[in-house]
Structure formats: structure tokens, C-alpha cells
Image (tube, rainbow, N blue to C red; front, side, top):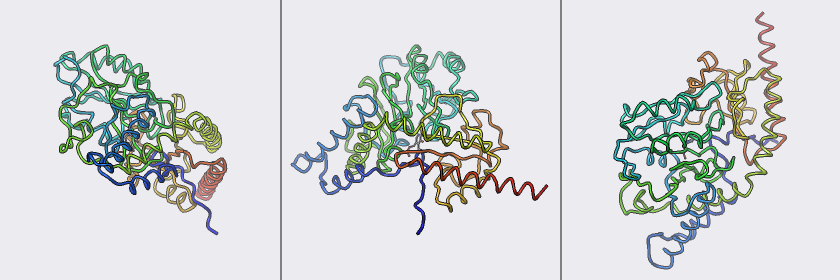
Length: 387
Ligand code: PLP
């Protein structure tokens, strides 16, 4: 009998939760166009509006300020635009991004390259708030828009978003928060964080891929130039008939993760600590270990990891883990996150990311550590032979 596989790549995509799968199926069967006035349309509309409440509850926002998108990449593309409008300040926007942002943010999207400034992080992966304040002050003729993630997809490091928001708001700016990795893993409250716009993604919380949302803190912020134009759905910000099954599954996953948030965070932190204690005995170094981190993520380097072969070997043994962020998997290339944290390119070959989630059991950690011990002793044996 083949052993069941052990999936430890929840930061790439978390397996679809049964609640979400059921909600997708129900929505598919229900059908209807939410913009139609007949009974079928009204039922579809009711589903979308209920889902909006559920997504708002996940991030402490208001349902009327949730805009559904095809995922967080689209939500972030939508938010990062010089066409943002808020209040009477007529200065042009200057976009600041932390150096460890996801690729969906780093490129700055509709901002010309010369209006995008990278803010450094320290060796622990945390944004340098002094450097941020200085950078904000060097462009007094521009209005600051800061894109800062709540938690990093590779390291799990949790950024001081509320402190950064204070610096930005003191200069009449806005903060766009990528909460993709944080949502469902730690408490997220758009108001307590001081975020003006927030992006979340369905497939990171056990909902379907291709679902996500941009959440506005208030109606005071407008996007003057939407990317997808047409029938004016989603208050004109994102046209196109809503992806009802995707939205329903996303909302069901949001409700499930929110209900289990505290107990799951505590459970996963225990498993993560056990994993890291075991890895420490095998000479592993965990990135961002001194910073606040998500309870599910371990991003580490060890001499017995060889990019390409170790991932394949673990895969053949039944473990799904990542060598870096999902978007770069398959390419052996220095992670920009580690580069920003000052990690040299020499260890690019020896890095793994293990990210736990709702499917992870205690036994999975023990089995992974056994596999790591085998890799470690094979490397040690190889060294002895070569010596
Ligand atoms: N932001 C972060 C931190 C992510 O990890 C990801 C996905 O890897 C995204 C944004 C993009 O999300 P989506 O896959 O929904 O477009």
C-alpha cells in the first residue's frame, strides 16, 4: 500500500477545505446572474452579498467595501495605481514598497518605474521604519502610497504594519496591505492595522484559486482607473459577471478559518516549534527566527539540502515542500526576500520552506524530521567517503 502524501506547502496553496468545495458545488448548481432582476438573479445576488459579509468579517472590514477579484495579484494590481483618489491632496503619488514584497507588488504595476522606491528590511526581515520615515520625507512634493505586506510568504515574518501606517498617514499618504499570507493564520483587522486597502486570496485559506478580494477601509478611497471595464459590477471598480462559485468557496473558507483561528494558530505553532527544534539538531538555520512570524512557516537553510535534488527526493518520499516562493519554484535563483535580508547567494542551493496548515498532523512532523535525518546522514556519509 502506498503511503499517503504529506502536504506541507500551504503558503503556496492550501488544499481546498470541504466547506469550500461544498459551497462551490452549491453555487454552480444554483446558477443565475447576480445582475439579473428575476428570482434566479436575486438568489445569486444574495449569495454574493452574504459572501461579502464573510470576507469583511475575516479582515474586520465592512461588507460594502469588499471588491471581489480573480485573486490577490489582481487586487494588488488594482490598488497600486496613480489613479487612487482620497481627499483633496492633489500631489502625485509616489509608491514605496518594502524590499520583501511579493512579485505582485514589487513591480509597482501602473506606476512608472521612477516613481517606485524600495524600502529596506533588516537581517530579521522586518521593514526598517527609520529608513521608511527618511524615504517618505525625501519626496515632499509627492503623496506617499506604501505597499507593505502583513506577513511574508517565504519567511512568515510579520511586519509592523500599524507603525508604518502611522508614518504614512502623518504625511497624508495611504497604505496598501497585502494580507494574503496573514489572513486565516493570525488575527487581521484592517482598522487596527491602519491599512487603507487590503488584498486577500482564496486559495491561501482553503478556498478555490482564482478568487480574491480588495478590501477598502472606507468609501473615502476611490480607484479612478479600473483595470477591467465593462458592465460596472463591483461598484464599477471591477467589471465582469462575478465568479459566483469561486466567491462562494472563498467565503466558506474564510468563515471556516476565522472560526478556528485561535485554536489552529496555537496548534500549528506547537508543530512548527517541534519541527524547528528537530531541524536545529540537524544544523538548520531558520530565517527571520528573531522576528514575529506566522505560526505555520519555517524557512530554513541546511548543509544537507541541495536545490533540485532534495526537493525531488522529498517529493518522491511523499513530501510536498517548497524551495522558495511558489512563483519561483522550479528555478534555482536567489530569493529576493533573502537577498533583502542580507543572505549571501552562496546558500541559494540549500534552502527549504515548510508551511503547515489545516491538513497537518503531529505525525507529519515526525515523518518529515525522519526524512531530514536521512538526508543529513547521507550527506555526512558522502563527506566521510570523499574525505
Ligand atoms: N501576495 C502574497 C504574499 C502571496 O503569497 C501571493 C501568492 O503567492 C500573492 C500575493 C498572489 O496571490 P494570488 O495567487 O491570489 O494572485
